Amino acid sequence: MPIQFKMVAKRNNLVQPPEVNYYPCAVNQGEETLESLAQKICAASSLTEADCFGVMYALSNAISEALTDGKIVRIDSLGTFQLTLKATGSPEPTVRGKSLIKENKIVFKPSKRLKARVAKATYEQLK
Image (cartoon, rainbow, N blue to C red; front, top):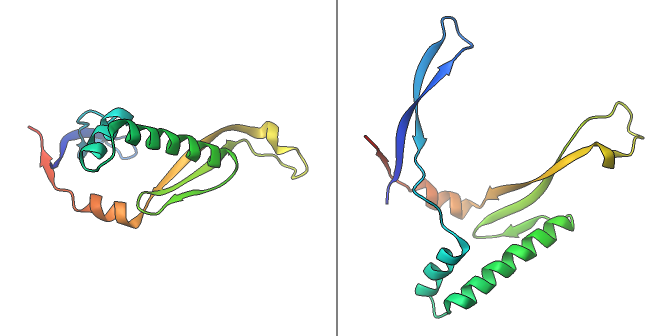
């Protein structure tokens, strides 16, 4: 199925006079849940839906546990998950940094294989 997109107007206020340009923007076609992915996987394999759901749920838990243990999670055919920190700076390196941390974020870097498969996508403009 082609990736559907629409043209969206975006205003550039950095130039005088301000100008409007139109850019393609992907249109969301809904979402896939853990349950719907389990159904698709069980239809393409000899596993039951419950088996697929259980494995994916356990994988999700294993990834979050590894990330909180400070590890990078690499799934060769999917990509890499890694934690990054958002914090305020300190003028002195001797300050205990824990109080400076505001939040953490999960960064996902897709694998070359996943990028290559998505790069083959076709596109269709909505009217």
